Length: 492
Image (tube, rainbow, N blue to C red):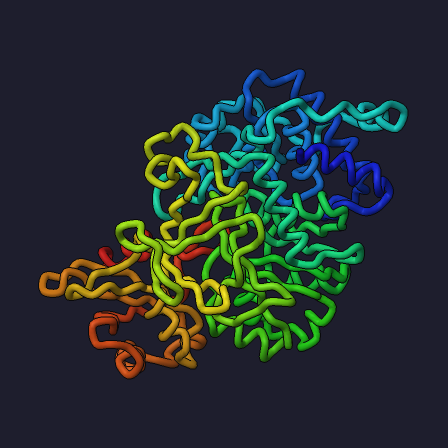
């Protein structure tokens, strides 16, 4: 299905720009020809059903992704920020015997039990040129419900798991994004999320390819790189995670009209702090359209759109996806009530790779996926995320979600970011401990912040301790790694 979409785009607009990166630019005709050449290389050199992609956001990644699927195999996007040992474990689990990479990642590829093809050294000019004289091979006759892409979760809460995403599910999610973002012929994407992250994969690779839109790939995020790319490329669409938007806010040189030409800014991948959304609106005059999704849902479940927006929510559920809010006994919770978010639809994963028991624990026989997130609908269908079920604390018999405390602390004028965990307590069972990053060193004390929280929260929700840090331990996309925060607490 996805290869068919690439071929359809190529026929429609062969000469239109498809992707631009630091090495150059490719049209859809050139991208398709390179993908076809890589298809041939894969068929000649691999025996397994999976192919590793250890590549930054680039035209090479796009071509390798579609070339792998064109060969009837499953693409495994690999996180180049993981350690060599972590990547080797993923390679063994995924079972691939070939990986596409770049020389800059040679130390990582050396640990993989697979043959490495460095894309900058491949001599495929003859094969690519040949497709100007002969037709492209047909798309493979694989089932739309076979596994097209096998991304691995980042491992911030445990061991990495392969998530089996189908071609049908990815195409459905891409089509929904095209519709909900109201994409038109003049839209242009700026890609700042690595393609091993499912939001970057679907939002910045598959969507523009299906719709036939140009994308500029920024291989490594930095605020300066984003601002320079906006100036040179003039994108209309940017999808990023909240910590990236927060980093841009800290870039003092950013002009007030820096985002004037960007039609839609989508925030996903983690909760959007109210303070970041408010500050972005005040400084740049632009709304951040928060959405909600998971790797297991390909990823988009809900999204604030230009025509249906509510600040503080993650938008309405997108077409083709069902969401129900479930109570402790799987009963449906009425509007306004908190419960676990359950998702069903074409875009839900087939399962966790090689993990049938873990799949059965979260995916019911009738297709409902237990997200582990807690949320509620308002009366107009906007979804609000309360927190993570696994992070919920029970303090003196009362349920407490870290996100509520984090939101309050982030309203303090000197707090840039907050993260809260629960720790064991002899008298209350658990208590909250907060970690914060200040806007300026020494601008607030632990007592200041606890007093601030005490005025705005029930007593049992007030953090027992507030630890002030220069930065948080983070995962590859900027997500806070709360496991490591817990380790910092025990070390202290």
